[in-house]
Amino acid sequence: MLKWRMKHVNQQIFVLMILIITIPLLIISVIIYLFSIQAVKNEYQSSSNLILTNLSFNIDQYLQSIEKGTLNAQMDGQLQGALEHWTLAGEDSGNDQMIVYGNIIEHFISSIEMTIKNVDSVQIYAGSRMFYSMNFNRSDYDVKDFTHEDWYIQTQQKAGGIVLFGAHLPFHRVNAKESVISIARVINKVGSKQPIGVMLIDIRLDSLREILKLSEDRKRNFIIIDDKGGVIYNSNRNQSISDLSATLKEQAIQSMLGNETGSFYANFSGVDSYINFVTSSYSGWKVIQYIDEKEMTKQADILIKIVLTLAFLSLGTALLFMFILSARVTKPIILLSRQVKLVGLGKFDVDLSSDRQDEFGVLYQGIRKMVEDLQSYIERSATAMVQQKIAQFGALKSQINPHFLANVLESIQMKAVINGQREISEMVGMIGRLFRIQIQTGKETVSLREELEHIRLYVKIQQLRFGDKIQYSEKLADESAELQVIHFSLQPLIENAIVHGLERLSGPGLLEVSTVKSGNDMLIMIKDNGVGMDEEKLQQLQLRLAQPSSALDEAHIGIKNVHDRICFYFGEQYGLTLYSQTGQGTTVIIRLPMKQG
Image 1 (tube, helix red, strand yellow):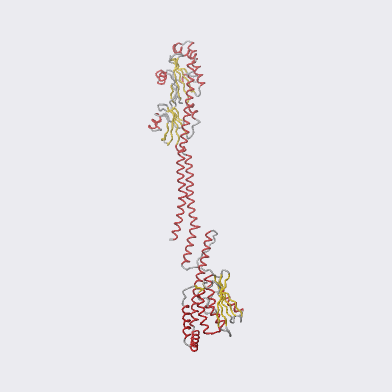
Image 2 (cartoon, rainbow, N blue to C red):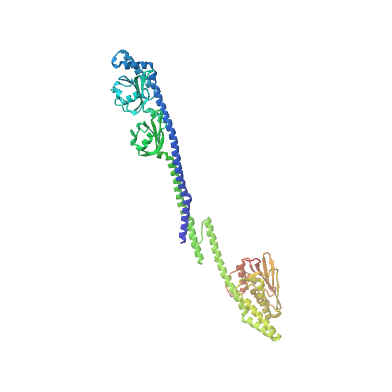
């Protein structure tokens, strides 16, 4: 269950990284993509409208320049005279003067071809004859009754106005392959509306291509149509378009024909495209521009690919981070949790070693130290509890020892004989009080005042046994009465002073309990003037205090027990210190903290 939870934490971290990195990147990429597409489209639309307007203006300028060239026919007197005589006399007159007139007309045609750029040919129709440039032979033309042809009739109807003809094969030219644009107008006699001829100028499509070439590229293509929808020019030479209905829907065509300018998105020759158009105010032609929509949004597509790549890289980073997190964090935590669980079950022989130098290494070291301290604490606690029971058992045992009770009863009997029954009640009462204090074993610590009450009763009973041989006194410092001491910690020391010090003394002995402050500690001193001990025995006893207890019946076990209990309860810096000299007595100093808890 724990392992599943840890994995679930990994999943949460992974999901969190997705939520705060990958998903925002995806959202940002979509927003950027949408704004970029719109911005690019707006830019293309704006630039396309400007380009179309300029192109339409340039085309109009070019056509107007040709129109101005045709006005020379209205101003040239020689041409006017030649056309007028030719029209009146006709081709059948056959005199030399007619030949001269013909040469004048052909010379004018040659001059027009030289002054107008990209002119394919110039023809002048007078009477029933067509005059043309010297660059063509008569066999190149098949001229019949042109007066009944549509273009000629349209031109006559204009009565001197310009007539534009879209892309078409040259009229009357035999085996023509290249289409041309034609401008025709009636040549009127100067000063009157009398027609004396018709001028037809054919212009190569290269003229339009030169105008459009600066704007044409693989992104932008142009088509020029007349007011009937006929295609005049297509910038894509590899695409043959003679009828827009083959590439655009009829609705889109009608929309263009019915409006001066406009733009829309449509499928053009199988490609989704942006289409915009303008109408020439001079010629009435419509210049149409179409751009592949994919080309328009190409830069935005590159940008979205970059952002998407970053998003997927962040996803890969999140996966990599999850695996690294599992190997470097989750698995060590799972292992550590298992080891801690074993410690909780009481198994302290677990492997908490780690050679990592990061925070996990510190964590492993800290928990290993904690386990060691816990194990030491449990061991010391168990030892202290055993020692406490030993102390309680020893105290009770010393009080109910048959020898002790016999001596006490003997003393009571002697007192009863000497002094009567009045003191028997007092002695028995002291014994009862002593036993009542002894059975109060529920407290771990008591005040020094309570402990001394027990000691005084104990000493009084011993004085009943030894009489005036034992003298007892107390010298207590201020604030020491409420000092907390280990329960039954003074009685073993008093007993040890009487048994090993004063009882062996031939004369009267003195037993003194005193207290004195030492910094933040309180010193309790139990001093007797008994037989004392030599230096070797004193060192052995002090060494025994520093070592762990291994036997319950060893000598001076009471002193050892008291020392260990004090160290366990208050700390290693507290406990017993012994001073003794042979024949001078022994002093036991108990160091306890004044402020506890």
